[in-house]
Image (cartoon, rainbow, N blue to C red; front, side, top):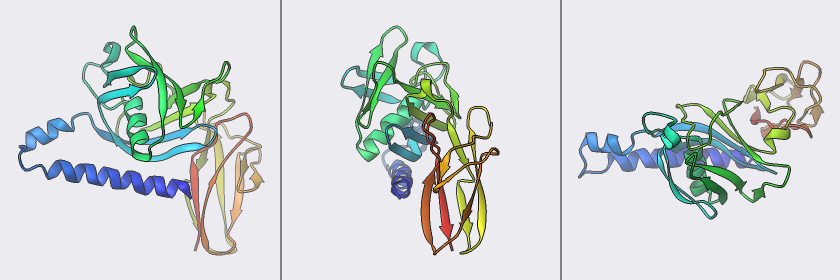
Length: 242
């Protein structure tokens, strides 16, 4: 049920941010707009040894501070990656860490003007396992402070990403059924769209088409994720038995 609380917290944060911005009597509309330039809402998921965060997040250009890297501007113009400032993958991570109060760390590369993330929420890199960054299920070609994001984008920080066979994606994300009725959930590799067999979901293994059938029992709400030992766990699927 943790994702419900994360989602509610993120929506409340977004609402309060917009409310506070609109309630600044001493600033003209143009000044308020300028203060939020480059900000937007993206879907952020952080998969470490557990799911650290999964919810929308409102973020934008900012100074980011890590224990190992210090404080540096993170606004998409790093290393001249983009002509104008904007929201980035690392900005989203930083905003989420402040919202849920989990730590993250990373060294800073002055040549690329970007952080190399080494630890998030207590999951820390090893000699063979590292944090990876994907945007809409594709590895980003640049670092997190260089990669700008658009509203509604899916940002995924994944631990041991470079050794993962698949980045699991489960659909639909919301299922509502009556007791005794069934619905099909499909698990694919988010990067390629290929169905993934042998992934565990709600106590079952997906078939060759990547599918499992979920049957409603007693009324209630359950949250499931697809997992496979060699892959990054999926997004959450909310199953409501009406």
